[in-house]
Amino acid sequence: MGMGLCWLGLALLLIIIAVLSLFWSKRKRVEFGLPSGNIIYTDLGIWVPQQESLYAPKYELVGRPDYLVKNQQGAIVPVEVKSARAPAEPHDGHVMQLAVYCLLVEEVYDIRPDYGILQYQDRAFAVEYSFELEEDLLEVLVCMHVDTYNGELNRSHKDRRRCSRCSMREHCSQRIG
Image (cartoon, rainbow, N blue to C red; front, top):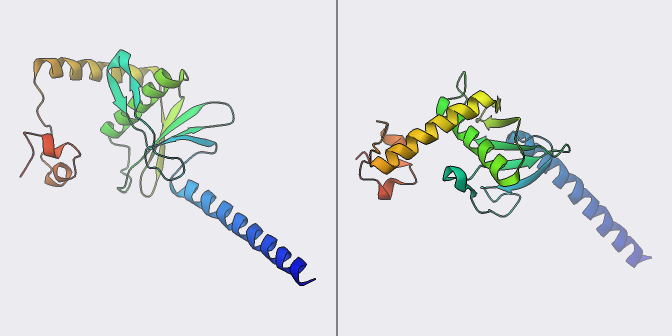
């Protein structure tokens, strides 16, 4: 009888741990602004091991969205998490970054996202991946490629904090300070 109670206690403990884990994971999904579905890609290595960058050779484009979530209908939603508080409207650069991830999803997975999510510290925005936004993105990419090939790449900011956190700082000849 003592051994049976031991097994019953262990089973009960495992059930409690499973319920708490489920509650914690649902809370984290809401906190990170993730839609329902399976996380199929993450750059953060939280739920899924960190994966390779997405690459679209046709556009000479590489990117690492924070999350890609595949919903029950098979659609893929890119999610970009920002640590700052939300502005009244998403910054244009953030919208363009999300558009890059939508384009990469379409190229890599052959599934065109309807939208992506910009998750700020205190608010999320669903950004429609319209054909107009895609066209704007392609125009920006053409300009970037022309500037790259012409060697005309100048930094376009004067924010010391932004420069100090830049992942390319060590390689930048135009860094501030």
